[in-house]
Length: 281
Image 1: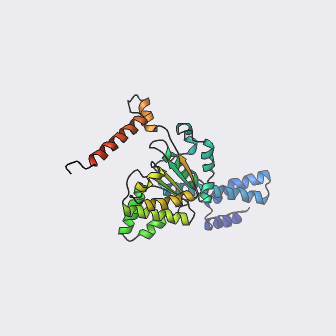
Image 2: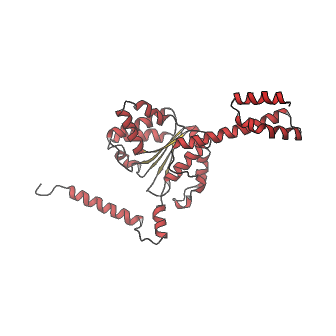
Image 3: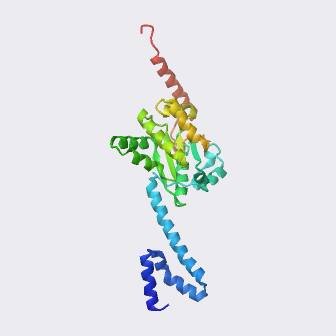
């Protein structure tokens, strides 16, 4: 290749914004000449480098858009700690087939057992395949939609949560939603259902308690569950909180999960008694 041809090729690559090809061209051309490559292989080597660089940039952009609080991976999750969760199931999730199938994943169980770790790791693996993901808590989603309602930008906000290939909805049921916020969340779930776009949900509430999640509206809760469960995998996780376990290892005396549950039940009973009308009332 003479100087004129080299200059013309460089200009063409710049015009096409093939920066990685332009950078790799001298070394690749030298290697091709030394090893007597055919033209198709030479072209394939150059395009492979460009494709890999574009994917790297896309993954970095996807991870930024996703707004994960931390980056977690499925290979780092301890299945044995969480009720003997089958590692093969996580490996199946890692293929991303559930995204293509529009299949939701619902992770249920007490706090601290790794639900959010799994959810984030699922999202990271989807980002690394070049697809868009967004992570949010149920409360943050509700607040953003309420602001959109106040500012007359609700349609745009709902589209924001509908567009990504995967939406991760964390901590559903941890904090109560008001009726308007619950209704707006329901609209997002409906939109994603209609477009067969999956949602990964983490919740500390069993399905029987989802009326509380949707501001006491049992009909809305049933309609939301109907859409979420239609195409879904449900994981009921159990085990001790990682945070409490680490505290115990450090020598801090803490009540067991059974003791905490007993105290919570006792407190609820006392609250019910206090709410009962007295003989004088």
